View 1: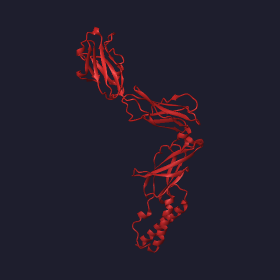
View 2: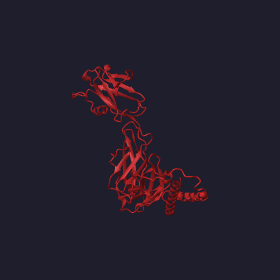
View 3: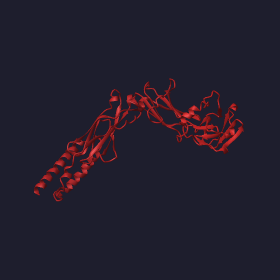
Length: 388
């Protein structure tokens, strides 16, 4: 309702008569926070209104008569000191009323701050097909009056200045350029902020679309057990299909967590392979696994690229440990080989440490040893059970 009144006040004929009843000066002023304002309401003499019966309101609240000034039989002023920021970006409503409460005229007050230089301008292209840019308002970001942000861009060495028109992404301070972008040629991009109190321009960034490419997460993700190894899972996936015709070197990253945990563990050393072994996991446990992709060096670009979003989680469980299920073992049954087992434990602990993640360490030997060890424990437990 308040916003509608501000629109109506551009037309001060609030009565149906063809003759204007009153006018406020100044009309719709823009003022900085902390300013003072003296406004005057002048009524038409032929109306025969009694000025000393008139009063002022600001956003519907009646102002104290101590702020009024009787300038003439037809003019009543009001003085406002140390104005605060507008309560709505469409402006505050200052109105003068006749003694019976009718609105004679009105004005919108825009009280705020000029914009500051926008910062943190960053851009990315999804599969080289488009360009999105976001930024942060300068300073505290609050101007109290409507501030317009315009993303502008042009080819660095030629071409006319253009501006982004699609701000309908649902996110503040983000604009989307859907098409008609040039590759292999740098763009200059900047943001202009403006309101009734001033303008401000961000720093200009220069970028090539190929240097800011991001893509879809990897697809066809499969997480499976590694035979009967109770502490390992194999992860495999496909390259992003949208970039199948591009020349690039992908990097992948994996993260995984326990079913009942919110803490993710990240594997950074995946490189450009499309499969990976996760080791050192908890037996008999459900894990959630996610992947993301970084398209590095598209068509020879020297920039690092931008990580994609994480894929949807894929779940898998490790096998239950035979040793955990078999109950307690006789502590005397292996005393004669305790030293050897300790040495093997230390050695294979070292191997296990270096096979964690997706390194190229010879994992085949480790797998064979783990299978042998599990079978050995299972056989020994069966023998112990028979003896009992």
